[in-house]
Amino acid sequence: MSHGHSHGGGGCRCAAEREEPPEQRGLAYGLYLHIDLERLQCLNESREGSGRGVFKPWEERTDRSKFVESDADEELLFNIPFTGNVKLKGIIIMGEDDDSHPSEMRLYKNIPQMSFDDTEREPDQTFSLNRDLTGELEYATKISRFSNVYHLSIHISKNFGADTTKVFYIGLRGEWTELRRHEVTICNYEASANPADHRVHQVTPQTHFIS
Image 1 (cartoon, rainbow, N blue to C red):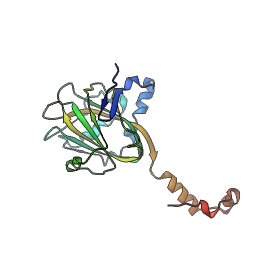
Image 2: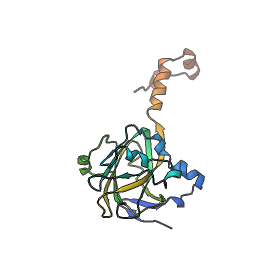
Image 3: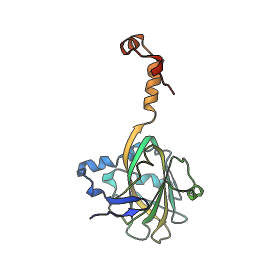
Image 4: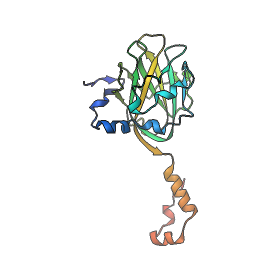
């Protein structure tokens, strides 16, 4: 089934339509491995710590024993710190087959410890969501805006009319790179510079750009 819609500047399509074979699909949504779960926050969750449980392997997305439900109203706010820099390409939001399913998602990048007051600012991207009961519907991000993300905030601002919102799975697809690995490597190399290395590579002072 094709989903060629455009939602608030982003499109959605079935993850099953992606070119990866099934055994590769789980790897594509592997960014959960690079989330700092100890520092992950979910504001307005009814059960403390339950928001972390929706970031799980693709193969476990249909496990309905792990979910998060909102508390005071229908809103949820996930503050997601990564362990490096991420290029975010797509998101899956899986909910219940009723009005508790999220209907709008707003994304903010690199604003650690966001509060609901902070969501009054303009988001980096907004999506109108369709009901997704199987974790197959992906919303494509504007990669130019999400190419250097160390912290992602997902604001579930609305559902389809229920008093509370329920989420079973959030899948994140993209690329991860270790934070500042290149700079550290350069600094370590220069701190233990070997004259023989300089003799071989003929390093000149103009090439030493150390930040």
